[in-house]
Amino acid sequence: MKYIIVIPDGCADDPQVSLGGKTPLQAAIRPAMNAAAKMGMVGLSNNVPASLTPASDVATLSLFGYDPMEVYTGRAPLETVAMGIKLNPGDWAIRCNLVNVVDGVMKDFTAGHIANEDGKELINTLQEKLGGEVKSPSGKVVGVLEFHAGVSYRNILVYRSKEPAPFAKETKGQPPHDIPDKAVAPYLPSGPGCELLKEIMQKSQALFLDHKVNKKRIAEGHKPATQCWLWGMGVSPVLKKFADVHNVNGAIISAVDLVRGVGMLLGWNRIDVPTATGYLDTDYAAKGRYAIEAIKNHDLVCVHVEAPDEASHEGRVDAKIEALEQIDRHIVAPLMAVLPSYKDWRILISPDHRTPVQTRAHSHGAVPFVIAGTGILANGQETYDEVAAAASSVLFAKGHDLMKVFLK
Image (cartoon, rainbow, N blue to C red; front, side, top):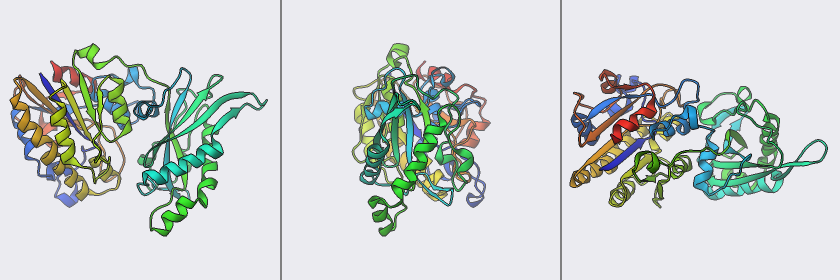
């Protein structure tokens, strides 16, 4: 059996007045997704338990068949895997965004989608000025701080423990993409160890204020990175390999370290598409081609596309519709054309979580999915969208149960 998973990140949405009451998914021209719906099973899946923050870390684990209530330890530790950063027992990984905060308000959680080279230079400054030994009041070295540059605004801070780390499960940080245009003061880190995190964030403001990178960005008409924002902290998770659980080998295609990292933790091969960006300008067609090639040598291939989620965070309905149409045309359609050449095959199309354009933030709630292919009976839905899924009688209250049905 050959299995394909396509994740249009954050595509689930609400009806829009500007679209005559349709959701962006309904408004998109998506013949391939609808073809899968007509021949397959459409339903709803709840990938984010109510007690956890709605985000791709929790939702992706759930979508891949792992109960986040049992295995989730934080977002940053998942990203470190893809970045090649090893966490030892007792070490903590912390997401380190470069953001644009003006007059105490979160104006842009991406700092204008800061270029990799600009982001790296700012992270290097943090390492030079703030990295290194952490000392107790008595002068004893209790830890070491390491700042690691990632992709664009997405970076990592590692706390290497010499003594038990000051953080705990109760240490919380707010995803900056969920507080657009909001005052940041109520959303600063809280819980054990939060004072160290807040101190780093405050010191970064002074370091970035007159930084040459920001001077250049302002001169070029780009938003400056005014500070770092720390969140998503946790220790390294322990996950059973996907092949050990399901006897299925896999590959992950994504431009986002978080999703790459989850796939790699499951034992899937990482396949990088050089022209994939993790943004609206990604190379959809190349992702489709790479997936078609990868399925030749793998039982399962997952293609993740970040673009719909990015469009929602920017509040751009038109861009979200365009991203969904590109996914349908260049990824789903070519895969649907090739898969029947294999004796047995199945395809699963599902976002990880909801990201409504109106709120520009992730939200709880079930998302629509479709499974089509060998052994899957049609359940009477003509289209793939939120309304068709809600009209179906199929609901996975625990999203991690969906994978068992897909692979059955």
